[in-house]
Image 1 (cartoon, one colour):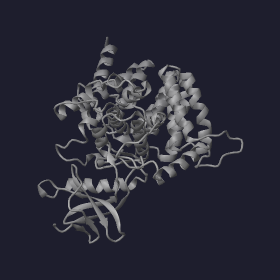
Image 2: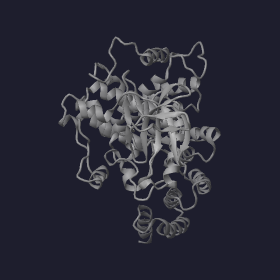
Image 3: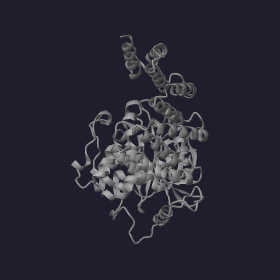
Image 4: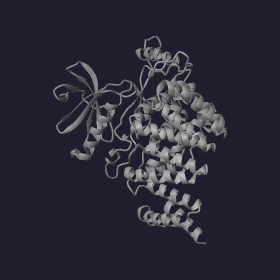
Length: 505
């Protein structure tokens, strides 16, 4: 038997790796200093030629994974270099990947599919709150452990929102796995939190149907379907899938990121179906074997159900309230919005927004999301006088909490100005938009598409208020810049060109 590899005189690896990926090998080993089992990911260079891009990505993965403190993410213990090859020492996870589970069982029981999706969304919530997007979520990167918990593996392609990590790529390398890639990632390489939710939709469909939603002979054929094809309805291939669960999968597979639900909503909508979680032969520990993880989770669940908030003391006259109330209110409001009951949806969200803000604070992440959704519901329902102040207050709190150039704060300012315009306060709207334009130019740069869109909005508002000469100057200058930056066939220059032609008639 060949001698075992030992890294840094401490980590003794087994004879053979247990897996290989795009840029690394995973080995089982033992930390001889602490006498514990570990997993070691060791970079693998194609043709044994060192690659600086791979090294940067590998180092970035170790840092990203170490930043995520969640039971559903393997802990990082150590990093180092062996013979010029970086390695990462991680917690050893025992279990079966969801890909292997599907290969063995075919379509999974509905309860287990929902439970795996819900746990995955719990991990993604932590990642997205840390401004990280996984970008390569798939059944092969989800590990079901014997105690029923799910671990999300391989953050090797993760990106930091708003950072430069997305530029660390290898020429000609696909950024993700075609069968689970969102349309925006396929078409433009862009990444938002909802990119991960699309992959959750692909994975949930596969768990329920036993087959991927989009299949083809080549990677190109699959990616083309991700952009253009409608996903198959689950109940046509599996009749016992509940209609609400099928609807959730279809919403997750929406081609436009903004039309997909967020991680918290997907979690809340999946949990009710995560019941009847019976045995999976050869996968789960015997029922008689105590599970420390489940023991812990049961108590945590009861704490959350008491309505006792962690972030702030409860006033004596305050009604019982928990974060679960936020999720349930958002689900109810979403259902009302789908039925065009905007006023009722706003009432539901307002009722929970008041105690949530009082108990958790106005800048708690869950409260901020709720407040933004409430403003959107009022706006979509035509209540511009109610939506405007809501957006304006949000923008002020976000600017104070995260800085004036925070993206969501700028978006709220734009929406507030739009509400003023739609309420007939054109002068105030123009003043706000022109002030916002200066800030967006400073934050995003003068050639950013968001800046060009804002200039278009100002030009159209000037035109609508009868200031034709000022509108003409703004729109003609914008047309020259938009054609130079975006090309003559882009929507912005085409719209401006059409408006100017109508004005000249």
